[in-house]
Image (cartoon, rainbow, N blue to C red; front, top):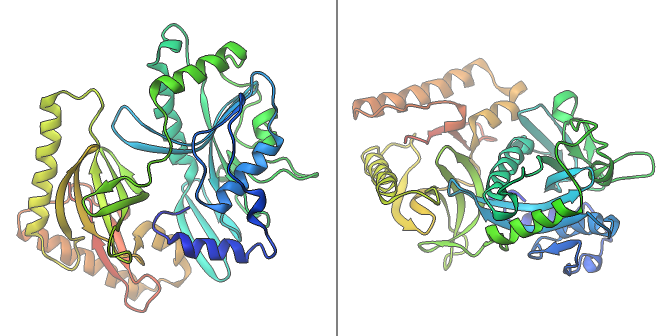
Length: 390
C-alpha cells in the first residue's frame, strides 16, 4: 500500500475491483516449519496475495518463507518486508503491489491507470534491491554465516491484482511477476523455476537444506520482528515510509488525537554501531537544519514545524500536503499536457524560491526534481515547494 494514501480509500477501490470477493479466504496465516508468518497483514489485498503463494508453496526441504516483518539495517533505516522466500532455485525478497488497472512505465518510473485515475511511483524494483542488499549485509554478520557466504538475495515484485493489464516492456519488465495461470508463468514459476524476466537461469549460491537452516537461525539472531506500525514520533503514529535518501527516511505521520491531521516526518538514521561522537554529529546536523529552515519562511519551501528525538535518531516534523507529488512524477504524469507557459511558470517559481534562500545566505546543494513537490498537480495553478535542504 502507498502509505500516503488512506487505507480506507484503498480498501474501497480494491473491493470495487473485485465484486463478490469474500475476505473469508484471507484469514490469519498460521506458521509452520516451512512458512513463518511473523505478523498478519492488516490489508485484505496483501493477505490475498500471500494466500495465493502460501496455498501453492511446497512443504518440503529446503523451502522456507517468512512473511510480514521488519528489520533495522546497519545504517539505522527501517525496512519492511512483505515476503522472504528461500527455495532450491534462489533466495528472494518479494514486494507485493496490488493496484488494479493498467501498469506501464520504464526502469525508473511506473504509472498505474485505473478508473480514470493516474498514479506515478518509483519503480519498486529499485528499492527492493536496496532492501535485499541491506538484509544480506545483516545476515552475513550473524554466527551461521561467519565462515560462509549468504546466498545472493534477488528482488521480485508480485503484482497481485487479478485483472491487472501489464504493459511494462524491456528492462522495466525485469523482476516483475503476476499471478500464475494455465498459460502464463507468474510468481510461483519465478520462485520455483526462476521463470521470470531478469532472472538468470542459474542462481548464485548454495540452496540446500543446511543453508536453509543457516538462514533461519541468522534471521532469528538478527531479530526480525512484526512490522511496528504503531511506532510514534511525538504525537504522530508512523504510517509507513514515503521517501528516503542518504542518511534519512521520510514517514507519513498521523496525529493520534486529530485523526485527519498528517505530517511528513523525517528521521535521520543512526548506524547501529555508531559511537557517541558520530551520534552527536548527526544530532547537531539535524538541529542545524531545523534552525536553518526556521529562517526560510517562504511558500515555496516545505515548512519545518517541530524538532524532536526518537529511538531511531533525531527527527524533523514537516508539513504534509496530501495532494502534492514529486516534480519528476508530475512530469511523467502530465507529460502531454504541460505547455510552454506552464513550464516557464514552474521554473519561475523555483527560481524565485532559490533567490529568496540565497538572500538568506542558504544554498541548496542537491536541487533536482526529486527535491521539489508540486502542490495542486491536477489544478490549473500548480505550485512548487522545495525540500531536502540538508
